Image (tube, rainbow, N blue to C red):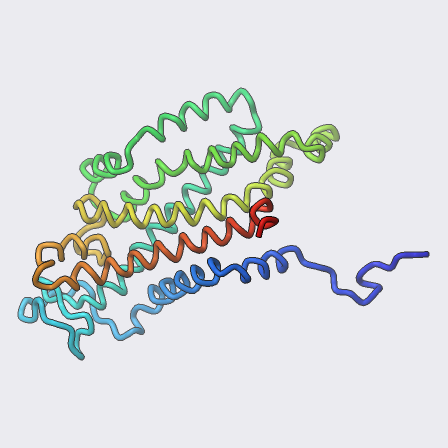
Length: 293
């Protein structure tokens, strides 16, 4: 008896990506985290359309005013609209977090693939990564700011360097496992070029863990940027940033606690949403956890 293919039998072929997406959407962590992250990203993109004003405009005549129809969250010690600064602060935090995650992942994947596949290179690469991991993030950021000047580029560079070794170690561990698989050995035996083996046969195995790690790197970068801005070694004071707002408002915390509470609330929600999304993706993409679920 001949077996008909799914197409001839009238059944639509299954798309593994759609199945994985459907499984992820059934995870409560992905739903809640994705909703929070989407809301924060939407707020950052549509900031000019949300009833905001110039977040850096100073008006000392209305300093420390309570919330009103003209300033929904009140004004700060310089008379700037707190609501506008909170909304535009999402742009700064997301820009830093996403940039650090993207650069750390890109460089980490490249170094991890080469180091994990070539044994001679692996020893040198891992010793360099161990040295980078020993550099404290805060001290590196303070040193770069003092040598150059406070800017988004400096903060991104200072946060990216310590995160690269984490990505390299993850990719290297995956490569060391996958390179012993029969399909990789078969590709080597038929003379497949090494770059093609790395891109076609090994790189796809690193995508799932990299997605999870990328969310944690993004959340960590947002938190560290806020801490650096709070210490005066992050973004310039004129740039709307949740860390800058918390630093400026701490002096008047007893008089107007909203100056610290509001940016802290949005910072906590953003990091919580990213972490929930990362936990949900880990539960979905890890086959051992998925089986227990």
